[in-house]
Length: 127
Length: 263
Image (cartoon, rainbow over all chains, first blue to last red; front, side, top):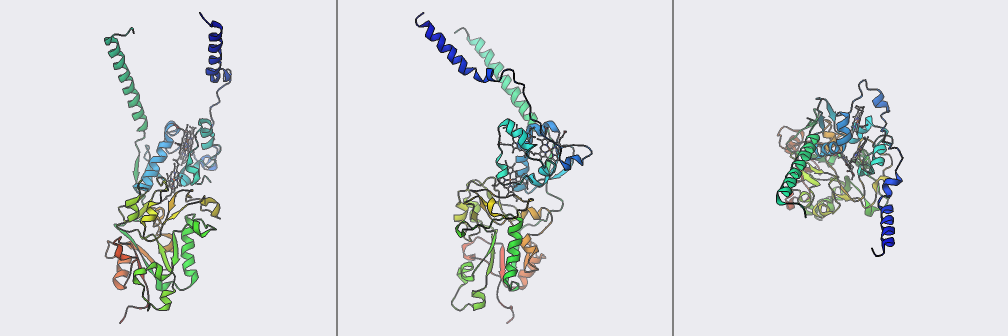
Protein backbone atom coordinates (compact mmCIF):
# COMPACT_ATOMS: atom_id res chain seq x y z
CA UNK A 1 0.00 0.00 0.00
CA UNK A 2 1.38 3.38 -0.94
CA UNK A 3 1.21 6.22 1.54
CA UNK A 4 -0.51 4.04 4.11
CA UNK A 5 0.48 6.33 6.97
CA UNK A 6 -1.01 9.40 5.35
CA UNK A 7 -4.22 7.64 4.50
CA UNK A 8 -4.65 6.32 8.02
CA UNK A 9 -3.92 9.72 9.59
CA UNK A 10 -6.42 11.19 7.14
CA UNK A 11 -9.05 8.69 8.17
CA UNK A 12 -8.40 9.33 11.85
CA UNK A 13 -8.69 13.08 11.41
CA UNK A 14 -11.86 12.59 9.39
CA UNK A 15 -13.39 10.38 12.09
CA UNK A 16 -12.38 12.89 14.74
CA UNK A 17 -14.41 15.53 12.94
CA UNK A 18 -17.31 13.36 11.84
CA UNK A 19 -17.87 11.82 15.26
CA UNK A 20 -17.44 15.06 17.18
CA UNK A 21 -21.17 15.39 18.03
CA UNK A 22 -21.20 11.88 19.43
CA UNK A 23 -18.15 11.92 21.68
CA UNK A 24 -18.59 15.51 22.81
CA UNK A 25 -21.99 14.58 24.25
CA UNK A 26 -20.85 11.25 25.64
CA UNK A 27 -21.63 10.75 29.29
CA UNK A 28 -23.86 13.79 29.55
CA UNK A 29 -27.38 13.01 30.70
CA UNK A 30 -30.25 14.19 28.56
CA UNK A 31 -32.26 16.89 30.29
CA UNK A 32 -35.77 17.09 28.88
CA UNK A 33 -37.43 20.50 29.09
CA UNK A 34 -39.78 20.97 32.03
CA UNK A 35 -42.61 23.26 31.00
CA UNK A 36 -43.98 24.88 34.13
CA UNK A 37 -47.73 24.67 34.76
CA UNK A 38 -47.60 26.64 37.96
CA UNK A 39 -49.71 29.66 37.04
CA UNK A 40 -52.56 31.21 39.05
CA UNK A 41 -55.14 30.22 36.45
CA UNK A 42 -54.05 26.56 36.37
CA UNK A 43 -53.72 26.44 40.17
CA UNK A 44 -57.38 27.39 40.38
CA UNK A 45 -58.48 24.41 38.26
CA UNK A 46 -59.80 21.36 40.04
CA UNK A 47 -59.00 19.03 37.18
CA UNK A 48 -55.93 20.32 35.42
CA UNK A 49 -56.75 19.90 31.77
CA UNK A 50 -55.64 21.62 28.61
CA UNK A 51 -57.97 22.24 25.66
CA UNK A 52 -57.02 18.78 24.39
CA UNK A 53 -55.23 15.78 25.98
CA UNK A 54 -51.70 16.52 27.05
CA UNK A 55 -50.04 14.15 24.58
CA UNK A 56 -51.96 15.68 21.72
CA UNK A 57 -51.10 19.21 22.85
CA UNK A 58 -47.45 18.35 23.20
CA UNK A 59 -47.20 17.00 19.70
CA UNK A 60 -49.77 19.05 17.82
CA UNK A 61 -50.21 22.44 19.50
CA UNK A 62 -48.62 24.28 16.58
CA UNK A 63 -51.10 22.76 14.19
CA UNK A 64 -53.98 23.44 16.54
CA UNK A 65 -52.96 27.09 16.73
CA UNK A 66 -52.88 27.39 12.97
CA UNK A 67 -56.33 25.79 12.77
CA UNK A 68 -57.57 28.22 15.41
CA UNK A 69 -56.15 31.13 13.49
CA UNK A 70 -57.73 30.12 10.21
CA UNK A 71 -61.10 29.24 11.74
CA UNK A 72 -61.23 32.60 13.56
CA UNK A 73 -60.02 34.89 10.83
CA UNK A 74 -60.98 33.18 7.60
CA UNK A 75 -64.20 31.42 8.52
CA UNK A 76 -65.43 33.66 11.31
CA UNK A 77 -65.71 30.74 13.73
CA UNK A 78 -64.30 31.67 17.10
CA UNK A 79 -65.64 28.82 19.20
CA UNK A 80 -63.57 25.66 19.47
CA UNK A 81 -65.44 22.56 20.58
CA UNK A 82 -62.82 20.07 21.71
CA UNK A 83 -62.82 16.27 21.62
CA UNK A 84 -64.50 16.22 25.06
CA UNK A 85 -67.29 18.47 23.78
CA UNK A 86 -66.19 21.52 25.79
CA UNK A 87 -66.21 24.97 24.21
CA UNK A 88 -63.34 27.46 24.26
CA UNK A 89 -63.18 30.97 22.89
CA UNK A 90 -60.50 31.01 20.22
CA UNK A 91 -57.72 33.35 21.20
CA UNK A 92 -54.01 32.88 21.56
CA UNK A 93 -53.65 35.77 23.99
CA UNK A 94 -56.88 35.49 25.91
CA UNK A 95 -57.28 31.71 26.07
CA UNK A 96 -53.93 29.87 25.77
CA UNK A 97 -51.94 32.57 27.50
CA UNK A 98 -54.51 33.16 30.23
CA UNK A 99 -53.78 29.66 31.54
CA UNK A 100 -50.17 29.50 30.41
CA UNK A 101 -49.45 32.99 31.68
CA UNK A 102 -45.76 32.34 32.35
CA UNK A 103 -44.56 32.16 28.76
CA UNK A 104 -40.88 32.04 29.71
CA UNK A 105 -41.24 29.00 31.91
CA UNK A 106 -43.75 27.26 29.65
CA UNK A 107 -43.63 27.90 25.89
CA UNK A 108 -40.05 29.17 25.85
CA UNK A 109 -38.80 26.34 28.03
CA UNK A 110 -39.59 23.80 25.30
CA UNK A 111 -38.91 26.05 22.37
CA UNK A 112 -35.41 26.93 23.52
CA UNK A 113 -34.74 23.25 23.89
CA UNK A 114 -36.11 22.44 20.43
CA UNK A 115 -34.48 25.46 18.82
CA UNK A 116 -37.69 26.96 17.49
CA UNK A 117 -38.65 30.59 17.90
CA UNK A 118 -42.25 31.09 16.79
CA UNK A 119 -42.70 34.58 15.34
CA UNK A 120 -46.16 34.90 16.89
CA UNK A 121 -44.79 37.15 19.65
CA UNK A 122 -43.88 39.84 17.12
CA UNK A 123 -47.54 40.74 17.36
CA UNK A 124 -49.26 38.70 20.06
CA UNK A 125 -48.84 39.72 23.68
CA UNK A 126 -47.92 37.00 26.15
CA UNK A 127 -49.07 38.98 29.23
CA UNK B 1 -23.89 -5.87 -7.88
CA UNK B 2 -25.29 -8.82 -6.05
CA UNK B 3 -28.97 -7.97 -6.32
CA UNK B 4 -31.15 -9.63 -8.87
CA UNK B 5 -34.35 -8.31 -10.26
CA UNK B 6 -36.53 -10.31 -7.88
CA UNK B 7 -34.63 -9.15 -4.82
CA UNK B 8 -34.89 -5.54 -5.97
CA UNK B 9 -38.66 -5.77 -6.45
CA UNK B 10 -39.06 -7.36 -3.03
CA UNK B 11 -37.15 -4.55 -1.33
CA UNK B 12 -38.98 -1.89 -3.30
CA UNK B 13 -42.32 -3.41 -2.27
CA UNK B 14 -41.36 -3.49 1.41
CA UNK B 15 -40.24 0.11 1.22
CA UNK B 16 -43.60 1.13 -0.20
CA UNK B 17 -45.44 -0.66 2.59
CA UNK B 18 -43.22 1.06 5.14
CA UNK B 19 -43.92 4.50 3.72
CA UNK B 20 -47.64 3.71 3.61
CA UNK B 21 -47.81 2.66 7.26
CA UNK B 22 -45.78 5.67 8.38
CA UNK B 23 -47.97 8.03 6.39
CA UNK B 24 -51.15 6.50 7.73
CA UNK B 25 -49.84 6.94 11.26
CA UNK B 26 -49.15 10.61 10.67
CA UNK B 27 -52.65 10.98 9.33
CA UNK B 28 -54.19 9.30 12.37
CA UNK B 29 -52.12 11.43 14.74
CA UNK B 30 -53.21 14.61 13.07
CA UNK B 31 -56.87 13.69 13.46
CA UNK B 32 -57.09 12.23 16.93
CA UNK B 33 -58.99 15.21 18.17
CA UNK B 34 -62.58 14.94 17.00
CA UNK B 35 -63.04 18.65 17.40
CA UNK B 36 -65.20 21.25 15.71
CA UNK B 37 -65.34 24.96 15.07
CA UNK B 38 -68.45 27.09 15.37
CA UNK B 39 -69.43 30.75 15.45
CA UNK B 40 -69.73 32.17 18.95
CA UNK B 41 -73.21 32.27 20.51
CA UNK B 42 -73.15 36.03 21.02
CA UNK B 43 -72.08 36.80 17.46
CA UNK B 44 -73.86 39.66 15.66
CA UNK B 45 -74.87 38.49 12.20
CA UNK B 46 -75.80 40.30 9.02
CA UNK B 47 -76.06 39.59 5.34
CA UNK B 48 -74.28 42.83 4.53
CA UNK B 49 -72.75 45.01 7.23
CA UNK B 50 -72.84 48.75 6.59
CA UNK B 51 -72.30 52.01 8.42
CA UNK B 52 -73.99 55.40 8.37
CA UNK B 53 -72.10 58.46 9.61
CA UNK B 54 -74.28 61.45 10.36
CA UNK B 55 -71.72 64.23 10.15
CA UNK B 56 -74.25 66.82 11.28
CA UNK B 57 -73.93 65.34 14.73
CA UNK B 58 -70.16 65.82 14.84
CA UNK B 59 -69.78 69.36 16.13
CA UNK B 60 -66.62 69.72 18.16
CA UNK B 61 -63.09 68.47 17.74
CA UNK B 62 -63.74 66.26 20.75
CA UNK B 63 -66.59 64.48 18.97
CA UNK B 64 -64.15 63.24 16.34
CA UNK B 65 -61.28 62.53 18.69
CA UNK B 66 -63.41 60.45 21.05
CA UNK B 67 -64.39 58.12 18.23
CA UNK B 68 -60.89 57.91 16.75
CA UNK B 69 -59.31 57.26 20.13
CA UNK B 70 -61.82 54.53 20.94
CA UNK B 71 -60.73 52.62 17.84
CA UNK B 72 -57.02 53.31 17.95
CA UNK B 73 -56.73 52.49 21.62
CA UNK B 74 -58.38 49.07 21.60
CA UNK B 75 -56.62 48.01 18.39
CA UNK B 76 -53.15 49.16 19.45
CA UNK B 77 -52.81 51.52 16.50
CA UNK B 78 -49.49 53.32 16.95
CA UNK B 79 -48.99 57.10 16.93
CA UNK B 80 -46.02 57.47 14.64
CA UNK B 81 -43.84 60.55 15.14
CA UNK B 82 -43.13 60.95 11.41
CA UNK B 83 -46.29 61.63 9.34
CA UNK B 84 -44.78 59.61 6.50
CA UNK B 85 -45.07 56.48 8.68
CA UNK B 86 -48.63 57.27 9.80
CA UNK B 87 -50.86 54.31 10.71
CA UNK B 88 -54.58 55.01 10.73
CA UNK B 89 -57.77 52.98 10.88
CA UNK B 90 -60.14 55.94 11.22
CA UNK B 91 -59.17 59.54 10.61
CA UNK B 92 -60.36 62.92 9.29
CA UNK B 93 -59.82 64.70 6.01
CA UNK B 94 -61.33 67.83 4.46
CA UNK B 95 -64.40 67.71 2.23
CA UNK B 96 -62.57 68.29 -1.04
CA UNK B 97 -60.23 65.35 -0.54
CA UNK B 98 -62.94 63.09 0.84
CA UNK B 99 -65.49 63.78 -1.87
CA UNK B 100 -63.52 65.14 -4.85
CA UNK B 101 -66.36 64.51 -7.30
CA UNK B 102 -68.85 66.45 -5.20
CA UNK B 103 -66.67 69.57 -4.78
CA UNK B 104 -67.66 72.84 -6.45
CA UNK B 105 -66.71 76.46 -5.80
CA UNK B 106 -70.03 77.17 -4.07
CA UNK B 107 -70.00 74.50 -1.41
CA UNK B 108 -70.90 76.33 1.83
CA UNK B 109 -67.84 77.12 3.92
CA UNK B 110 -69.12 75.22 6.97
CA UNK B 111 -69.11 72.07 4.84
CA UNK B 112 -65.95 72.83 2.93
CA UNK B 113 -64.11 73.22 6.20
CA UNK B 114 -65.81 70.45 8.10
CA UNK B 115 -63.59 67.47 8.92
CA UNK B 116 -64.97 64.29 7.35
CA UNK B 117 -64.58 61.08 9.34
CA UNK B 118 -63.02 58.42 7.12
CA UNK B 119 -62.38 54.68 7.45
CA UNK B 120 -62.27 51.57 5.27
CA UNK B 121 -65.42 51.51 3.13
CA UNK B 122 -65.69 47.72 3.10
CA UNK B 123 -66.59 47.99 -0.58
CA UNK B 124 -68.69 45.35 -2.27
CA UNK B 125 -66.29 45.39 -5.23
CA UNK B 126 -63.18 45.89 -3.16
CA UNK B 127 -60.19 46.49 -5.45
CA UNK B 128 -57.77 45.68 -2.62
CA UNK B 129 -58.99 42.09 -2.35
CA UNK B 130 -58.68 41.62 -6.09
CA UNK B 131 -55.04 42.62 -6.21
CA UNK B 132 -53.86 40.89 -3.03
CA UNK B 133 -51.64 38.00 -4.21
CA UNK B 134 -51.95 35.97 -0.99
CA UNK B 135 -55.63 36.57 -0.16
CA UNK B 136 -54.49 38.20 3.07
CA UNK B 137 -57.29 40.65 2.46
CA UNK B 138 -60.56 39.08 1.36
CA UNK B 139 -64.31 39.58 1.38
CA UNK B 140 -66.26 37.82 4.09
CA UNK B 141 -69.78 36.64 3.24
CA UNK B 142 -71.15 39.40 5.50
CA UNK B 143 -69.50 42.08 3.37
CA UNK B 144 -66.57 42.90 5.62
CA UNK B 145 -63.23 43.37 3.90
CA UNK B 146 -61.19 41.26 6.27
CA UNK B 147 -57.49 41.53 6.92
CA UNK B 148 -55.49 38.40 7.81
CA UNK B 149 -52.19 39.76 9.09
CA UNK B 150 -50.68 36.30 9.11
CA UNK B 151 -50.78 36.09 5.34
CA UNK B 152 -49.72 39.63 4.56
CA UNK B 153 -46.37 39.72 2.78
CA UNK B 154 -46.18 43.51 2.70
CA UNK B 155 -46.31 43.92 -1.09
CA UNK B 156 -48.64 46.94 -0.74
CA UNK B 157 -50.62 46.16 -3.89
CA UNK B 158 -53.75 46.66 -1.78
CA UNK B 159 -52.63 50.17 -0.92
CA UNK B 160 -52.19 50.94 -4.58
CA UNK B 161 -55.59 49.39 -5.27
CA UNK B 162 -57.54 51.22 -2.57
CA UNK B 163 -58.95 54.51 -3.90
CA UNK B 164 -59.69 55.75 -0.37
CA UNK B 165 -56.29 55.66 1.31
CA UNK B 166 -57.72 53.39 3.95
CA UNK B 167 -54.64 51.21 4.31
CA UNK B 168 -51.41 51.87 6.18
CA UNK B 169 -48.10 50.10 5.89
CA UNK B 170 -45.86 49.43 8.88
CA UNK B 171 -42.55 50.83 7.72
CA UNK B 172 -41.21 50.58 11.26
CA UNK B 173 -41.94 48.38 14.24
CA UNK B 174 -45.16 49.86 15.62
CA UNK B 175 -44.73 48.38 19.12
CA UNK B 176 -42.57 51.22 20.36
CA UNK B 177 -45.22 53.74 19.42
CA UNK B 178 -48.15 52.30 21.32
CA UNK B 179 -48.11 53.86 24.75
CA UNK B 180 -50.51 51.80 26.75
CA UNK B 181 -51.26 48.67 24.73
CA UNK B 182 -54.50 46.74 25.07
CA UNK B 183 -53.28 43.26 26.07
CA UNK B 184 -56.41 41.61 24.70
CA UNK B 185 -55.75 42.54 21.08
CA UNK B 186 -52.60 41.73 19.10
CA UNK B 187 -50.13 44.23 17.64
CA UNK B 188 -48.85 44.27 14.11
CA UNK B 189 -45.22 43.94 13.12
CA UNK B 190 -43.07 45.76 10.61
CA UNK B 191 -43.85 44.86 7.00
CA UNK B 192 -47.60 44.29 7.18
CA UNK B 193 -50.51 46.42 6.01
CA UNK B 194 -53.32 47.22 8.41
CA UNK B 195 -56.72 48.91 8.39
CA UNK B 196 -60.18 49.05 9.94
CA UNK B 197 -61.84 45.63 10.16
CA UNK B 198 -65.35 46.83 11.18
CA UNK B 199 -64.31 45.37 14.55
CA UNK B 200 -64.80 41.72 13.60
CA UNK B 201 -63.39 40.66 16.95
CA UNK B 202 -66.10 42.69 18.73
CA UNK B 203 -68.92 41.44 16.50
CA UNK B 204 -67.95 37.92 17.60
CA UNK B 205 -68.66 38.98 21.17
CA UNK B 206 -71.98 40.62 20.39
CA UNK B 207 -70.62 44.15 20.43
CA UNK B 208 -70.92 46.81 17.74
CA UNK B 209 -67.81 48.54 16.42
CA UNK B 210 -65.97 50.65 18.99
CA UNK B 211 -66.38 53.91 17.04
CA UNK B 212 -70.14 53.40 16.72
CA UNK B 213 -70.45 52.66 20.41
CA UNK B 214 -68.59 55.84 21.35
CA UNK B 215 -70.31 58.11 18.81
CA UNK B 216 -73.39 58.94 20.92
CA UNK B 217 -75.67 58.01 18.04
CA UNK B 218 -73.81 59.89 15.30
CA UNK B 219 -72.76 56.59 13.70
CA UNK B 220 -75.02 53.66 12.96
CA UNK B 221 -74.15 50.08 12.11
CA UNK B 222 -76.41 47.39 10.72
CA UNK B 223 -77.53 45.08 7.97
CA UNK B 224 -77.94 46.77 4.61
CA UNK B 225 -80.01 43.85 3.33
CA UNK B 226 -82.56 44.12 6.11
CA UNK B 227 -85.14 46.84 5.30
CA UNK B 228 -85.95 47.17 9.00
CA UNK B 229 -82.40 47.65 10.18
CA UNK B 230 -81.32 50.88 11.80
CA UNK B 231 -79.11 51.80 8.86
CA UNK B 232 -81.78 51.12 6.25
CA UNK B 233 -84.40 53.14 8.09
CA UNK B 234 -82.00 56.03 8.50
CA UNK B 235 -80.95 55.90 4.84
CA UNK B 236 -84.60 55.89 3.80
CA UNK B 237 -85.19 59.12 5.70
CA UNK B 238 -82.02 61.05 4.97
CA UNK B 239 -80.19 61.78 1.74
CA UNK B 240 -76.75 60.18 1.91
CA UNK B 241 -73.61 60.21 -0.19
CA UNK B 242 -70.70 57.81 -0.54
CA UNK B 243 -67.08 58.41 -1.40
CA UNK B 244 -66.14 58.25 -5.11
CA UNK B 245 -69.28 56.37 -6.21
CA UNK B 246 -68.22 56.77 -9.85
CA UNK B 247 -65.54 54.10 -9.33
CA UNK B 248 -68.15 51.39 -8.87
CA UNK B 249 -66.61 49.97 -5.72
CA UNK B 250 -69.96 50.19 -3.86
CA UNK B 251 -68.77 51.50 -0.49
CA UNK B 252 -70.67 50.36 2.60
CA UNK B 253 -70.05 53.58 4.51
CA UNK B 254 -72.74 56.22 3.95
CA UNK B 255 -72.47 59.89 4.91
CA UNK B 256 -75.18 62.30 5.84
CA UNK B 257 -73.86 65.80 5.30
CA UNK B 258 -75.33 69.26 5.40
CA UNK B 259 -78.56 70.74 6.67
CA UNK B 260 -82.03 69.33 6.86
CA UNK B 261 -83.62 67.66 3.93
CA UNK B 262 -86.80 69.79 3.91
CA UNK B 263 -87.67 71.95 0.94
